[in-house]
Structure formats: structure tokens, C-alpha cells
Length: 302
Image 1 (spheres, helix red, strand yellow):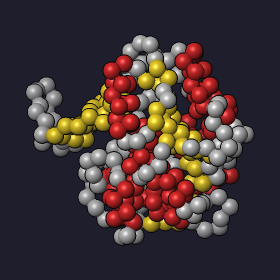
Image 2 (cartoon, one colour):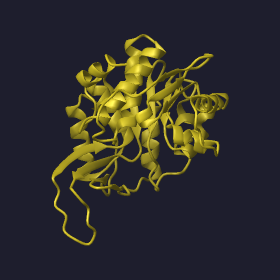
Image 3 (cartoon, rainbow, N blue to C red):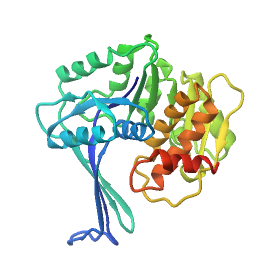
């Protein structure tokens, strides 16, 4: 079974307008409300690709109820810890002459609720996949990722981690099966600017030396590079051709596509890589997150 964890889920309110003028009334030309947060996005895309998953983390209030409703619409199960106060955050994504994002803070999470989540995750076992992704709300400790993985290590669970560099570097000691930095994040981890494929692969291998097993590096319009465990080679592909419509969730979609491709191919990393790349691109080319027909169409082009 696949499980996704989102510590700080959100409702994404996505709007478009010709131009954003501060200090004035702005009228939108398009609006959409989507359940969000990186793990939630992964579960939705997995559902679109025909793979069941269970999404967990912390939810509160009317916005939390809407996130659950949307997950169920996309064939994803939910097993969240329900908080007593507050509401899950609302993120406003403004797409005008420039893109602007306003991200909410999220509800308070106490120690008892945190322990409740740990107890849910401790039920996972051999053969399960756990995807940890996204930010940590300021009411949780900075080492929340480490605490989570330390509670369930040694049980034969495949860990996938997609998080900013401070969170990611600290969990490499748990030997995550897959990590997914982008090329800029990878360079930041080592204080350098990566200019060539060779430099990207070199630094991906440094993360493997620190404990990561497989490293998937997204490069936006330039495609992606995948450095598998134990191999002397790597996979690279340019991004499929298409018009960028919405970058929100593209990275999460790549993770979902990679996991789905790996499962469907019985462990073929090249197939998983191509599936991940095309799923990320399919989301970027759509107002919504990637669907199976969109991904299949792009797979025929690479």
C-alpha cells in the first residue's frame, strides 16, 4: 500500500487575472479551488493513474473537510488526524502578469495529536511505500521528518522524501529509497551552482554517499535526470513538448508518476523515470493535475 504524509495540507485557491494592481479592486477571469499540499497532490495523481493510496497528516475545520471530499473524489483513501481547533490553511495562487503566492499558516498541532499520527504510521510494514513531502508548520518541531522515520525504520518500508534541503539532508541517514530535489535545490545543498549534467550527476552521487538510494532531479523545462542506486549510469530526458499552464503540483506529480511506473513495471527504473517525467509534464500542461490519458499521450513522444 502507498501512504502519503502531508503535515500542513491546504486548500489552493487559484485565480487568473490580466494584471494584479495592489491597492485596488481586481476582478478575476478564472478561479478554481483544489485540495493541496504536496502529499495530497501525490495521492490525487496516484488516483488518476489508477493506484490506490492513503493520505494522512493533520486536518482541521471546514477546509479540512473539503480536502477529504476532494481526495475521495479522486479515489484516494484518507486517514488524517483531526485537530480540534482552527482550520487547514488556504493558499492563494495569483496568476497575472507575474505569479504571486500567499500561503496560509495552518492550525496548531499539539503533542498528543502528533503522537496519534505516529501511531497510525507505525501500522505500516513490509512492502509499503511512505511518501513524505512538503513543509512543516511552525507548530511542529524542526526534526519532524526525522522523528517520523525513526519511529518506523527497519520495517521494510520504502521511504520517498520530497522536501527542502534542510529537511532532506537530515533524513539521508535513514536511507530513503527515493529523493527528488530539483537542480537548483541540489546545488544549494552543496553551496554551488550546477551548470552541466555531469555536475548534477556528481552531486546526486554525493547524496547517495550520504545515504540516499535513488536520486531523481527535476529540471523544469529542461527535463529530468535520474541516478539509480548501485549503477554506473544515469538516465536523462528532455521534457515533453507542451505549453506551460500551471506549475503547481508538477513536482508532486513527478513523484506519483515515478512510483506508479515502478510498480507497474515490476521495478524497471527506466520505465519509472519516463512515467515520472511525463506525469510531471502532464500536470504542468493542464489546469488540473495529470490524468492517465494525458500521461500516456506524452509517453509516446519521448
